[in-house]
Image (cartoon, rainbow, N blue to C red; front, top):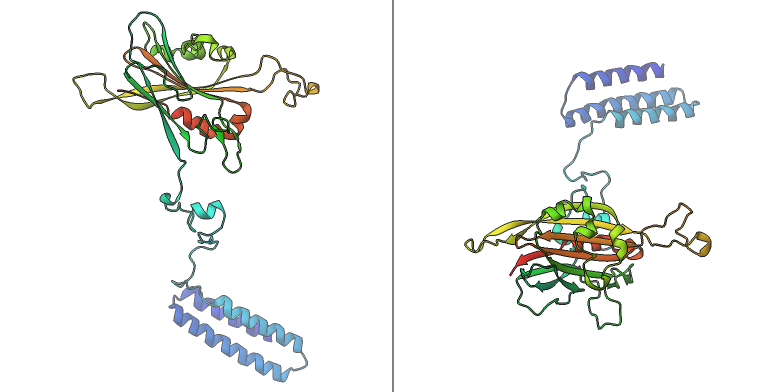
Length: 336
């Protein structure tokens, strides 16, 4: 009989909730009245049928479950909006907590520290018009010539890299936490002044050969490792940057200069076997790249090619590849 009463009450309660749309307060009031009525009936049954104590506990549990299940869910303004809310404490916490708000949106971008860089500026002479190939070279920021500067070039390196050549640390040594190693072999900027030199030279570089098109074999004393002449082209792209206009009449005007970026790499000429101590030789017939050249080049209207080459080995590449790419992409040329 108790089961039939419970089913009857459930049916009445569900009917009133399904077809009537009461306010939250009236719904809670009605459910409270129904629950009180059921609790009174349960008490009467308990007095008339006391020996069945276990059944009475089950009935009381069902009545309480019905009471809480029938209550409509009402959201309060002071409740947390997000189920999985991250800690908003600025002290401690992981990187995700520091960069993102509890709702997943990016925190104040001003609170994120940008990588600090220093600018290396180098002056180059303008076109000589002598009819021969003229090369001016700057190694690791040195000035290539005492002639008047017609062109200004620059690139940026991270301040965490050692740039003091008189220091006991190696040049470009990164002593920041987790690094503690040399990040780059050498940074070279050079200019090529040659007849009939224009932007088409760079456009055809991937077909003719990047190193040959950039006159890397023309620098004196075999400046670059000659393995670069047979280096593999890993990737390439073009970028555009502003430059002062060459038109004298348009003082203060700027043009758009196109830069070609190439990633070159080559393996050593000799590759010791695994048994000889070379753990990177897996018997596949070749060794991994051990020389990487990141290049940025452009040709000005005056017929001068400007090139920046960032060199590193495989260990430096593993440690600082993102910094090395930024150095190469920061290369810029302007008219004085």
